[in-house]
Length: 362
Image 1 (cartoon, rainbow, N blue to C red):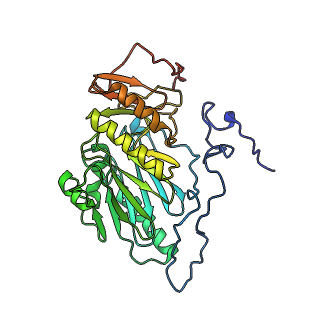
Image 2: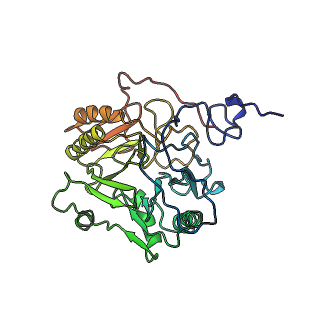
Image 3: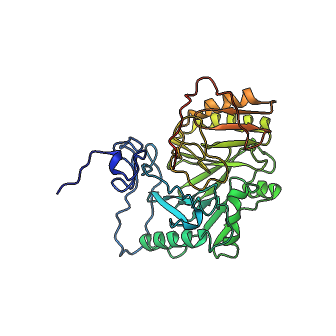
């Protein structure tokens, strides 16, 4: 019997969900990944005389699958049985990993990118203990599989953070200490600047990480952290922004640096194509302006991870408005917190943001 290909939320296992058992990888009718971009072919034979070499020059962004749903935790964290690290293969050279929300409530994202001469892991999660958060074991397994398919004996790994100060993204670094063929970008600000060749040009300059045909740009973006950096991947046209810009509560440490970093990214997008802005977390719900509280381990109605580049215009506009004021400012896709508590609440709902009550999870 032919399966019913018409999407029906009632069949998804959750009436409010666009995914579930019927569409475990998301609703195929959503136009997240339009066809037409030229990409390398991953269907290569397992028996070959030499390693596979990919051409990372693309006419447009390399396509990939991102219309899926992330695991969203449990009411009782101790009873959660989801994978400690959820792994999604965006395309043959790009992986998106997320820490289980019941292991750490921020559920940070990490990104694993491959080139012809090495791999890059962007950020490392919020938990150091490998038995709770097996990040290195997961990354090693992915690297081993890629090496087997492509005929590579050794794949050097670079581990870099969008902020060495951000405890939600730097704790997993300890798991990679002593790992062979591994470079861990130093976290102290002065040493990190030297590593990227930015000691004399911070924050105006840019650094590079060459993975072999796939060169990742390093863009200084302080503001939420004084050592903040963003990474640009010209293969997928992704801009990885950590906690500088993500769908959640953005805690501004220095409002002048924050605005300058957003403007720097805006200028970057004027000369470099960006398909998605990929942050380090999801805290927003799928209704505008509403976010989950801190320490929540059950988030069944999350907004999608990816953000359109136009969100930079809105972020810049409201970063200017909030500059110099101790204030919470709510927008549909993010919330700015300038010198106020992350638990701050407001009785005044902002004009232009629909005030929709989200469904109750219980």
